[in-house]
Length: 416
Image (cartoon, rainbow, N blue to C red; front, top):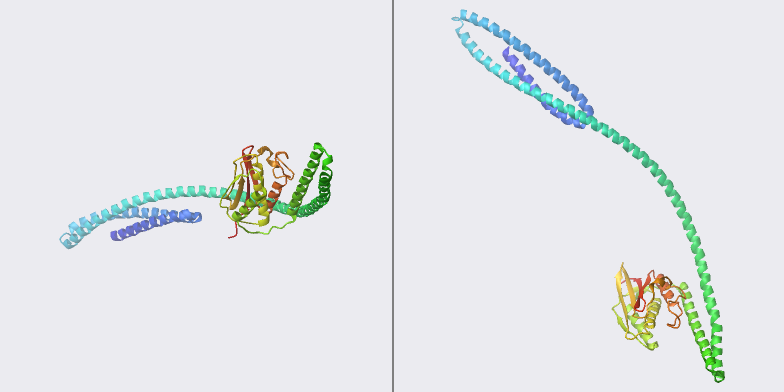
């Protein structure tokens, strides 16, 4: 009977160890699934109930053992009475008693281990309870975050609807604006054509009377010059000079008007050769004080060679003109690269101008110096700006009065 009880205790202990391992597995699964936790807790409660039953069974078995011990005392008395006949049985009983003592010691050890296991199980249950509380808090936080996400989603839907309406409105406005731009562009092109036609007609029609004035004035000076005094001759000369300036002004006006109709023929331009040609032509035609030239190795660019030549002519001739009142001046022609563009510049040491009047610099008929100081029509820089704009470039200037000026313009790189 005692061996059977010991076997049952061992089985119960093994079952307790198995339950401990299952509890660890259940603790890991508790983090993953809240619903599984409820199921596992019920299982644990069942195991705890079974453990209580097992403990009661153990107490009952101990009571039975005590009863058996009392019976053993009686049996020992009976055995003493029958000692002679049961000597062999006595020896076996001694051995059985020793085995029983060993088993009792083992049972005490198992009981101690079971107490430790129960304490560990209670600790684990407390930890599971804490984890369950933390999981409940996390679930509440998750529910709150989900509600906030739903609110944000609703707000986003509203915002997207408003954005879609705004985009539709912008698209309509862009369509209307594009149509207006097309209409304004057509109107502007028509106005520009009318203006160019008017400028050409006016310039062309003015040529004949200017020639007549200049021709008749020369006839009067040649045929009747001896009948005029000094003031009369001076007046005739002034009329011829002014008619000549008017002719130059008309020529510049025609050139400016033609730029609007001229298409740009893009090709690679050797700037070194072009600048050298312009310099030789201007020095050949010029007289008086000629400045020194300092010309760097200029990179090639892409553009209309005839138009870019006119740019160089206007800028270099201006540099020569505005340095003519000074001796030993130098004109520097150089370049640099910026934002994938070639920037060319002409720098002189001439009269310069006041930068506060810079906004007038590239205007038609705008002059920053009087006619008595320097001759000119006031169209040259306007032509330069128009040519560079047709090349999708930019022209600008820097200057200090009585120190000198520097004019810049940018062009695209050559295609090579």
